[in-house]
Image (cartoon, rainbow, N blue to C red):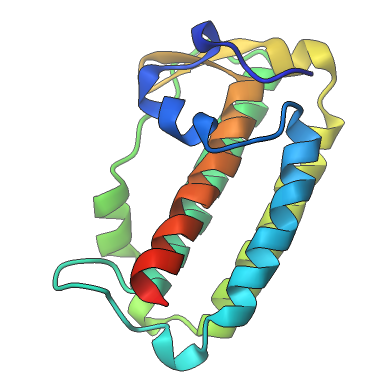
Length: 169
């Protein structure tokens, strides 16, 4: 399945999709594993409660956000792949972060949770056939394909990998 075309996703996710160098969804998931593993190895536990500036998320809050977004995007992909016709709700990432209580989470468990969640996401996308990947639906009243959601997930992670490397480490 090739990269999604610009008609397959809203402008709001274009920057995320542009961060993905691969042209096929499963190759992109596989390629990102090394970047994630390398990043996680470089983050010491004593940095987990660090924010790079006042009012910015700590690494715990950032990883909780990544987990929340991965779950939401995966749910959207599943719904659309299965033919859901209803609009799927948008979400306010800042409100989710405020309500997450990530400050009370164990850093190593957060990392483990993300790794298991990502593996589950990869397995779900691997189970989709070409017809399912091409299906479109609406989320936040914006049309998007299942394939574009997968590329958005991967690009969203690259976006945060770049932020962590440049501002937290």
